[in-house]
Image (cartoon, rainbow, N blue to C red; front, side, top):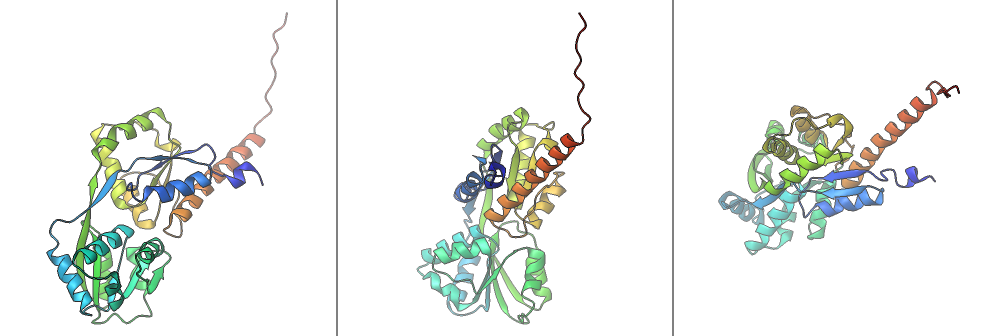
Length: 287
């Protein structure tokens, strides 16, 4: 096995923009594939200050008032379970409902002793309802913990199926102001080979950081952009970014594999171009 096969990202500097608590997972997988992870969190998830609606949802869950509990992100799961503990409940109250989560979020839940009854390989708002096609949602009570500013697609599609959805905001994604200067410096110098985005929030704060630094002339075509899912990719494209890699599964491992595939294709294209180039002529100077 060649080095490019065993470590397909050898020598590539890859920016990790996800929150500091989650960055090590992606950074580790990148390093295992030979990359040099550059960790620069662009967002910092923070719990909401007004927890009245969240608390009411947790109390109702503990009393068996919900049929479904749907987590759309690992951060949402963490903050929700932290609040459950703060209110004096055991995490196992979640099992009063059928728990639905993506693969990465299901792992986070399992670490806290909560079992996901339905694990979706590709958790995307537009497709969650379809992936629950065999379940009857008519008049079913659904608790949906989520981030502030979350897109309305998921609750809307669930309600179209007849579900009664309670949305509760559990956290907000705050910007990390000190990330703007180093980000602009690296982009100007061309030292980054790839950028990873793991949520729409990371994309929005990336663009905000560029605006703060008045950076409009960075060489985007020289940087591979990888987004963890279609929703994040759509946000990136809406902001004028070219997206090169979108994995089929919304996990760190799948994201790195998709990124490695892009560089592999580029190596193949470069090799093919070199093989097809006309022979170079050796020009000697006459005496």
